[in-house]
Image (cartoon, rainbow, N blue to C red; front, side, top):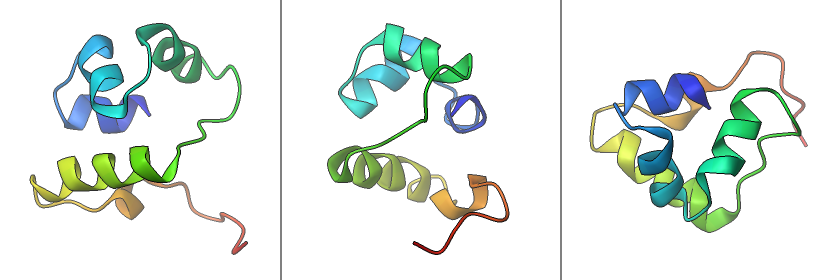
Amino acid sequence: MKQIRDFLDLSQDGFAALLGTTKNTVARRERGEGEPMLTLSQWLRLQKALSDKGRQIEEFLPDGLPDS
C-alpha cells in the first residue's frame, strides 16, 4: 500500500480519504498488520486515481498471487 500511496504522492490522511477509511487503518496495513483487503468501491477508486496518472493497480501487485 505504501508504494501506491507514495506514487500518488498522498499522505496517510489523503490516502485514507481516497479509500474512505481511517489513517489508523492505512498505518496498520503499512506496518504489515493484517492483510490489505479492499472493498470493490475502494479498488475502483484506487484504480481511477492510478489510471489518472497513467498506471494500473496490477503494476503494484506482488508476483505469484493466487488466481482465485
